[in-house]
Image 1 (cartoon, protein in one colour):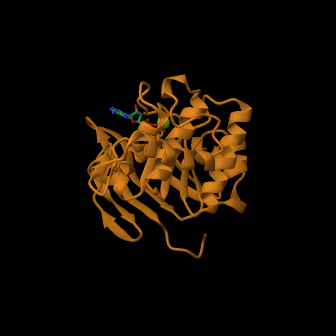
Image 2 (image 1 turned 90 degrees about the horizontal axis):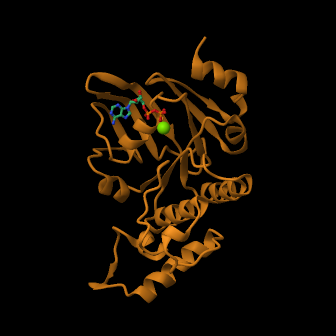
Length: 243
Ligand code: ADP
Ligand code: MG
């Protein structure tokens, strides 16, 4: 992945909330087909940075480039159209709608001017779910699914939108070991398909298992990045908490 061009560059990102500096001069460069871990202690600014990328917050300063081209990220729909998907810690699905409806929500429910019918929507949703090895049906209500299954719906939705950058914000926090293993399999498969995954975690074992690179922020500031061969718990802890 080193030889390819970055799919995403965020440079000099600054964000304040009522005078409180949540991020200052943060940089991150992400390549296609890599799992890029984003680390930092609670309150470091990880989620805020990703909300800026997803168009949920607007940065006070800095530049975002997708495929080398500067973009202005002003709302979530725009981020989505640029191929960015984010799976929040608090999942973002409509519980009383079906899996298929959630996957297609806010997207082209229309084809050739006519709305897709339920059957066609479910058929298309089923295809994506099959690729994810999901154990539930496109017609199931989201409210009947486990957290891990709801995450799969979010991933399916990202794939449906042809997302090229997938952000996962502490995705294993509520998962069992088995569910975590299954998620890791999916993450690796997406990486192999060339999707860039920004993976937020503070669990060292997950970083070892998944990360191709790590970037660290501390107190809203960018500390640095490590390549896979440079990653060690000692170094990461030092970067995260400082000495
Ligand atoms: P992390 O995800 O690394 O734990 P966050 O990005 O959630 O950290 O938060 C970074 C800092 O910004 C924290 O001090 C948090 O309280 C503050 N913050 C985040 N979002 C808001 C907001 N909407 N309003 C005010 N302060 C916020
Ligand atoms: Mg967070």
